[in-house]
Length: 209
Image 1 (cartoon, one colour):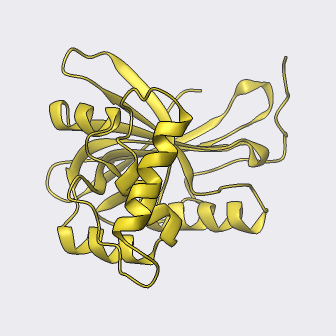
Image 2 (tube, rainbow, N blue to C red):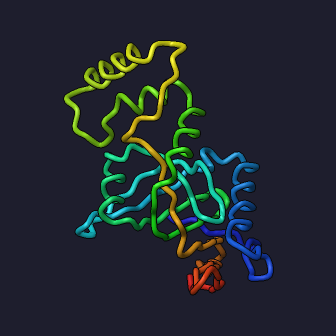
């Protein structure tokens, strides 16, 4: 299976924004405007203490000059791996636009206040699910999960606020590199990467495809 990329698309240094948050905002807005499904979906790559990698798709909930934020159960596989090895990669696979954004960086917990504010904005079903699911743990069957959800729903009946679980919260990936990848004909893709340099500066580099 092979798909040839368009010849008239490209990304030059003169097209690139002065900083990665601005450039990312432009491309994310393009993905939203193009009607891509789940444009804020990103592949999160982590590794355990022994270096064994794992990946999954999560949703970006916030970004700013400090980094990219997602939320999860701290006891999940990704949560425990990040506790042992606080480095991660992110990939935004905007394939219909022949674009990717690839991020690498160190990961840290967001503040509890930020977690609680976001959790309060979630649909009630998602709030209950965060309490009911011991994410990544082995369960005997679907019925056990549904029973756990029923018990949580009784604990927090309709009209009762659902607090953020103590085992649930946000992570921020503080980027060391942010690469903007644009497909080109002949596999001569454009790859422009912002790389953190000493202090708070950033260098822009072109990578071979």
